[in-house]
Length: 461
Ligand code: UDX
Image 1 (cartoon, rainbow, N blue to C red):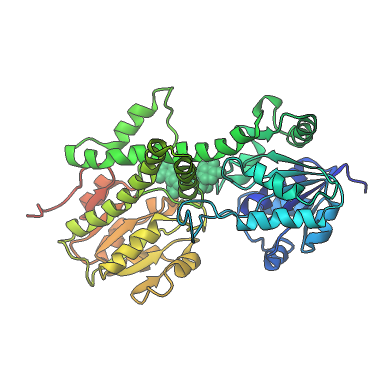
Image 2: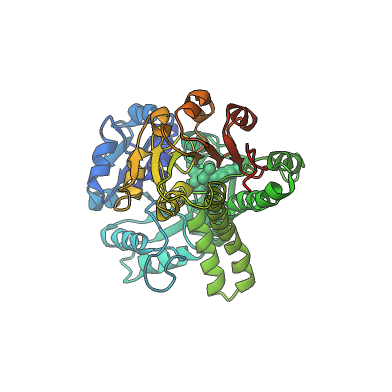
């Protein structure tokens, strides 16, 4: 079959893989190919066990694979053949040198730009899909046009806003699609080509075209705003615990103001995930680079509150449990950074587990999907850690349960049975406020919700 256009995506990870599957599904006349240096990942994409789990993804891949969706290993051939190249390689936080721990590590991204330049034999549109610092497009353009082979590369920024667990739905029904372009005749032409792809299923008014720098920056700012909402509500939780206010009531009262809105105001033990911290630190780094220290401090505060919230959670455990956790058994309910995923990247559970291990507690970790990742995260420090899938078994003999992830199953457990099998006094620290605290207290637990006064059976002093 003759395809209208050939799209290539370099980087078959979370964002690239799912976005391309949806594009292939919605645009059958386009050939969509994914390539990755990780050949094992490509094999997985070509198998029945895809490298990532997302509701709805299996069906789409089955429907399109081999028809207009291909996963390949030959980078050179894939680049030569493509008209439009999406670059979706990872841009983690830099771990070395200047900007370590803050700036984005652009080595994979630059390597990709150089590969495109080396292999390309015809004009191409290059679409930045990875989250990148503002003005990265100009660096990419310089690399691509150096030692000019007479080939024109037009750079477009098209950041991705999908969220794990609802990625397919987020792509199929996005709030908006952002397309940043250069205001030149070739820039406008490229913009229209990318708009044409999304217009197959996204209403035209939801496709926003903007200047390329605005587009790059909007992605960082959107994530910073979302994380800031979580930190804002979390920052109020200690005040609630002390004064007797209830954070759920405060959150509801605040969120009903239509100017504020109710989403992303759930208090927690702290946000995790691969994006929030990384993107905020990246924003902070850029601000400092340009001498905007007040702005940098402001956004850095969002990450600091998150760290404070995690540490506060551990200290509350320590205070509640008579100032020592040594040799006590603590069961972590959940390890994933949020429910419905096996992803543990930057999960607050990692931080809490490490701190509890430092306090010489013994841990029993349970999670319906994330235990494999938990083992990797705690490798080398987990002599006193057990990984047990069944929550009843995991909690047996423990002094305390700490809820780390808001999995639905934890709401529905038989807590009378759990209480019977625990050491007394038994404690529950609900880091997600998903349990029925009053009921747990009646059963006999000492209950410590987030942002609400604790329910304890005896005064600690
Ligand atoms: C996020 C953005 O939502 C998405 O648009 C972007 O493309 C990538 O980063 P994701 O990391 O999948 O997506 O997770 P998200 O659902 O946003 O949650 C992030 C963290 O915040 C989780 O740990 C979650 O549990 C926590 N959270 C979220 C809260 O603690 N309270 C809330 O009210 C909402």
